[in-house]
Picture 1: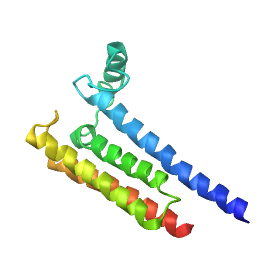
Picture 2 (picture 1 turned 90 degrees about the vertical axis):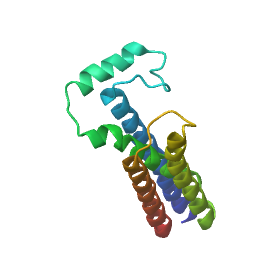
Picture 3 (picture 1 turned 180 degrees about the vertical axis):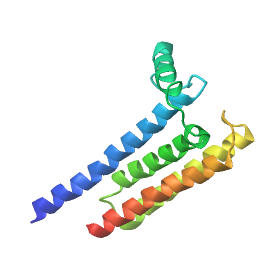
Length: 150
């Protein structure tokens, strides 16, 4: 019976990592396809043609609401970060997972605060703060439900 429980626990833990990866990837694709600036990080930094491909084959052809283009990536990255932290601490002590999820929340909020203060590049936006908090919140909810199931 223990072997089956271990496999289920591993699958739940891996699902956190997989969902985290796709969440961050989706946020990155939104950034690539619909933003007007070349990202200063990631694989397209050294491949301008790749960015042009995304920008002109997605952004020009598929219109999206402004909040999806400019704020949803923040929420997706926050969600991905919280799931990644939840995946790391899924099998650990119950409270340690919540400690790291709180660290994720602090990172998301501080990212915007540091933009406001000019310590990092970007534009402070309250909607980004809210989507980031919601992203981490959904990650905390998933973490809690999965921990209760085990």
